[in-house]
Amino acid sequence: MTDQAAVEFDTAGVKKKFMFVNSKAPYGTIYALEVLEMILISAAFEQHAVIAFVDDGVYQIKKGHNTKATGMKNFSPTYGVVEMEKEDADEDEDIDMVWRIVVEKESMEARGLTEDDFGVEVEVLDSAELAELMAEQEVVLAG
Amino acid sequence: MNKLHTVNKSPFDRSALETCLRLAKSGSSVLLIEDGVYAALAGTAKSGMIEGRKGDLKFYVLGADLDARGLSEKPMIDGVETVDYGGFVDLVCEHDSVHSWL
Amino acid sequence: MKIGVLVNEGPFTHQASDSAYHFTKAAIEKGHDVMRVFFYYDGVNNANKLSEPQSDDRNLVKMWGELANEHNVDLVVCVAAALRRGIKDEILADGFRISGLGQLIELGMAADRMVVFGD
Image 1 (cartoon, rainbow over the protein chains, first blue to last red):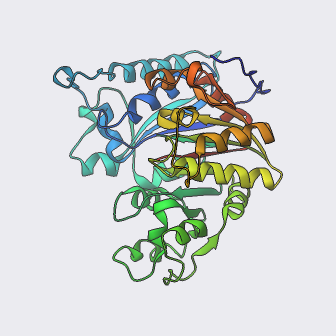
Image 2 (cartoon, one colour):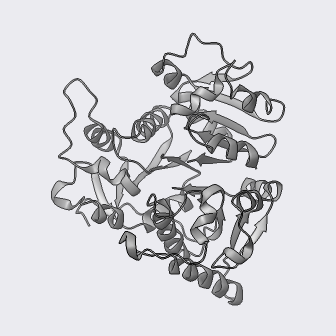
């Protein structure tokens, strides 16, 4: 960390609807991994979040990643952590944090995938439903 | 919520514009920047993408990026409005939130 | 209006940093408060003081630094992304500081608008 003075914001009581858009396949680029890191950090701030998988992003949550021969880090277990954060938030009445993990139906079907292919539990929304949900989000972060 | 969508890649190169148009709600706006400006040109194989949504989406294109690519003299799709960086800022403020399609 | 900017790509390889810079500059000229520009993924490379572009080309690293100093814009580089890419204090350009990813979430919470520039 640097000496340059940290700038503090007053965010007490702020609760926003964040959307994290995952649209890229895993491993070919780093976006999948680094968006995941953003998602996990956001849990500490108890913000609402929609974690959306569209286009090739649906491949990120496909079961059975085996990265041994590529030498890359298999980060797919981290999606399980995201799922756990969501479940904890759902169960804990003291936390006002709504997280949704959603997959676009058209993206999934175009790639010959079904919900059974995914390593986490997702809500499958068609384009119209996802468009409605996206329209409500206040802060959209993508990779 | 009235959203501003930005697309920065050519429709010939990436599917970002296609995905954006599939998921952009009626009444929102789309700003084309960087290589995304090619989608604003009339008479290309991809012009239909924007032509088809002029009825329910408002389209803008960043002039600086058209100029950079030598496109300012080329016919644009009717109704696509050219803005500068100041106009980009205004669009961001006039809409409730921004979705950059990467 | 309070505006937050996220830059996902490094200088030169993508236009993202240029676009973000011109957007930020225009926002400041219009009197808006660009609260923070956060650099993530390869965007951390915008903070590398060793960058030496050709003399007849723009120097993005310097441009961002000047913007920070002239207009008090908070330029934050994500520590995790920076470490991966070898961006450390010893090569950090003037005007930038390295901090945690939480600063991006806080920016999203505090700003009225958030704009992302990337690939």
